[in-house]
Image 1: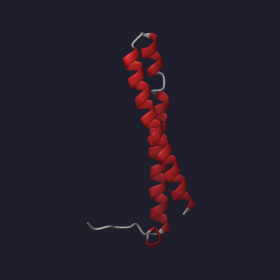
Image 2: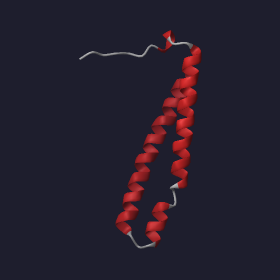
Image 3: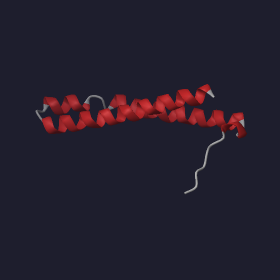
Length: 80
């Protein structure tokens, strides 16, 4: 198996900045989508649909984990 490494020092500063800007925009879009869907578990709970409420909460946990990983990655990339 070949292992490839990313050498950011060989890339131009402008290309790296553009990549980080795109990642930031994508993160913001996903964060906004998460915020807009935040009411779904409450809606299902009010309808007495407990299994669907639990499913929505589990999905929210996964989305939050992904968002947290992305924001950590953005922080690392900005620190370069």
